[in-house]
Length: 124
Image 1 (tube, helix red, strand yellow):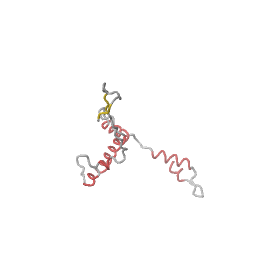
Image 2 (tube, rainbow, N blue to C red):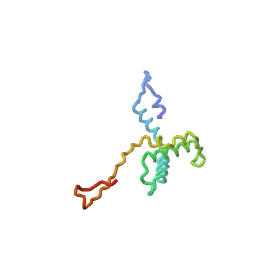
Image 3 (cartoon, one colour):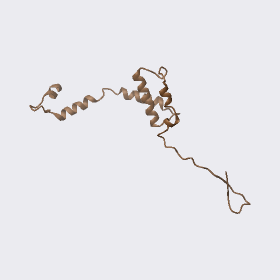
Image 4 (tube, rainbow, N blue to C red):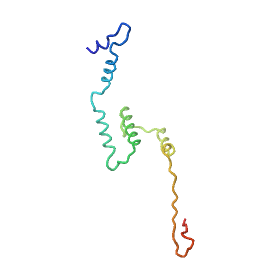
């Protein structure tokens, strides 16, 4: 029935039911199960434990991408091959180039001398 409705057209090749066509295409695009979402929640539960609860969303996203890429290749973390181009990307300048560097604060210690009338003096 739906096939007949979607294939029926006006004489000028215009869809007879354009809104119905959009609705059916939207319904057909929905997943038929939630297994993928359940798998992802399971993976995230294993990744973010009580001791590792401060992982940033960037780190979690990167771990998900690596796991997905390895799965697509049919590899695991034990069977993957690490090439020179991978190791060359492991420098501090490349890894942390997008992270804003904080200025280091200088902490000056001051001691009060009872004999010093001018006030506290700076100790370096």
